[in-house]
Image (cartoon, rainbow, N blue to C red):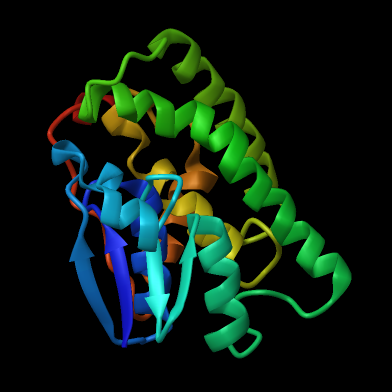
Length: 206
């Protein structure tokens, strides 16, 4: 059984939780209480993730951190070719969006949500502006293909889903992005989908 170390309101944690559920894998969830600083505890740093972050997994002794890296591992190990293309072009298209998830998505919707949900000191005006710049690009891509990297869902979609779905919690409205909203619905319709708990903040921006 795979052990998942995460926090329920962490979008990065939810990426991995969602992927594990879509793959139908049994999971032992280990709560890492970010509010209590459990991710900085010496044992956690020494044995799970030296960067002091969530999520991390322990797959029968294979300990991995970083949500996108974990998605790649799970797709290659358990995905049977369904979540990560086998050809070079397909893999590059997926990697493009994984890089954007670590860059523009993190600096935009994820950052804006950090301010409202976790009280982080964030330039929210800039984060919201970055969010809409990214969402315009995502909207354009989804007008050309059903999913981010093609006509089938991939780990690119899983990497993007949570922070886009919860963007309104950071006061980033999705009202102007019909293709994005349809894409979210497509992800939510997948067998095995599990959502992340929603918070009350930011909901006025739907």
